[in-house]
Length: 110
Figure 1 (cartoon, rainbow, N blue to C red):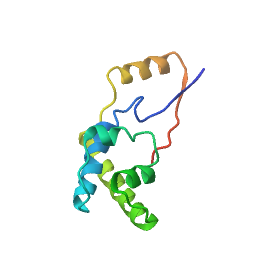
Figure 2: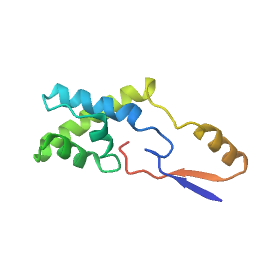
Figure 3: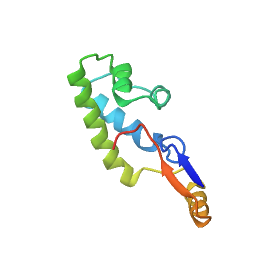
């Protein structure tokens, strides 16, 4: 049996990494700080949309630069702060032991 999972918000607690990464980039570029709730409300959308909504910026070149910086910080924070939801690892191991094929499908960046 094939079992397909979304990663962000399903297996992985996206807020453990992305909120901090986004806040750091906003602060670095002197954009208004956003609450955790504001940032989380945009999860599920593509990063360029999130950047536009949080900054008001419509310049594609600037948005792309901010997206790349957010990705850099995500990669840094995922190592120390990234967390799976409780029970995910156990569930995945049990599914694998039952010989299920496991796949992740995500619209997230690399």
